[in-house]
Structures are given as structure tokens and as C-alpha cells.
Image 1 (cartoon, one colour):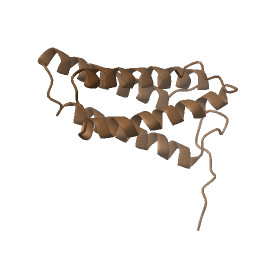
Image 2 (image 1 turned 135 degrees about the vertical axis):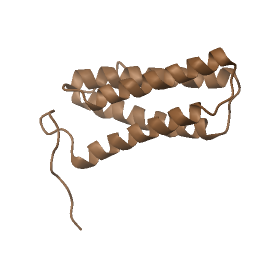
Image 3 (image 1 turned 45 degrees about the horizontal axis):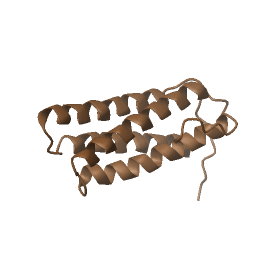
Image 4 (image 1 turned 60 degrees about the vertical axis):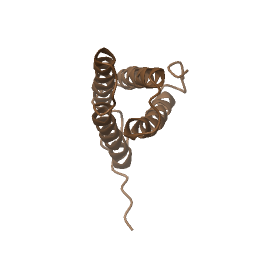
Length: 131
């Protein structure tokens, strides 16, 4: 068995290949969540809001993925997590329970919180972004 320890980051070797791959998988979960949001039946105005929130979450997650500094990554991850939480509020308001959107939401939320905690470790444990 071969263990990869090569670093691939502009952050002083902070990320391993495995970490980058996990972050890429999070982007894939975000994409799947966005697709699942298109299948949720809501009033037209609220459907547009759900899709806007989902796409903003994906945008900021992508910004975090390409960030050049730990601070920029932390900000983008926090904003992405905030948009994701806003989607939950909208889903809850209309009683959207079980289904693909909710399942992807749970997985994505856990992954984003984990990423925020990892980045907070790079900022000497600053958790000011998590509530």
C-alpha cells in the first residue's frame, strides 16, 4: 500500500493530496444538492430563492477551493455555509422533509462544517465563523 504525502497547495504545504480530493468531493456534493433543489416543488418565487441560495453557496465554495490565503478560504467557506443554512430554513418553512435535497443537505452541511473547522485550525483555532 502506498501512502501519498505530497503537498499540492499554495498554503505552505498545508493540504495533502487527500485533503484536496475531499474538498473536490464536497464540490460534487454541492452540485448534487443544487440539482436536487431543482426537483423540490415550491411556489415559483420561493423556488427561485432556493435556487439562488444554492447557487450562491456553490459559488462561494468554489471561491474557497481556489483561495490563495487561509483568511480568504475561511471567509468563503463561512459564506458558503451560511447560504447552505439559509436553504434549510426555506426547506423547513415549506415542510420539505425526506428526499434527495434534504439528504444532500445533511451530508454537505457536515462536510462544510468540517472544512470550516480545519481552516480554523490554520487561524490558530479561531471559530468566530461557526454558530
